[in-house]
Amino acid sequence: MPVIRKDADLQTVITTYEVTPGTCTELCEEIRVACNAFISKQPGFIGAALHVNDAKTRVASYSQWKTRDDFMHFLRSEEMQRYHEKFNALAKTSAPVLYDVVMVSE
Image (cartoon, rainbow, N blue to C red; front, side, top):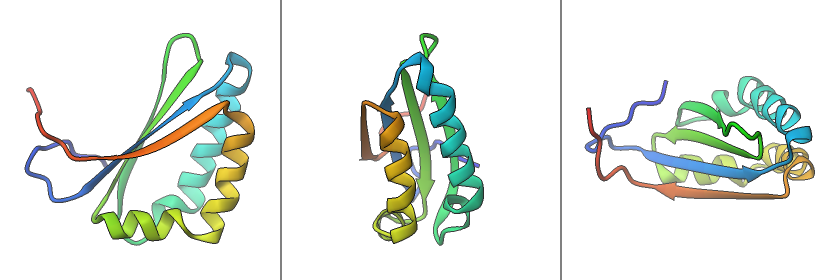
């Protein structure tokens, strides 16, 4: 399960996808399948969440990894490349970005 803390020693990755209302649900399902079947079983995986805007034109995937190297190894794997082909066929654009948490308000 993702934990958002400033002092957490982990790698946060937020990937945004631009989609159409007609492909949003299918992309979310493909990401869910990939997460359950492959992503969540990768070394260093901590947790993930999926967010959709109300217009169903944007999807944001939030994931956490123990280290940047864990994420990069997973991202470069052949199996993940096959999943990305499926995701990219459903999205107009996609952009994974690595982040550090700098502030949390409770």
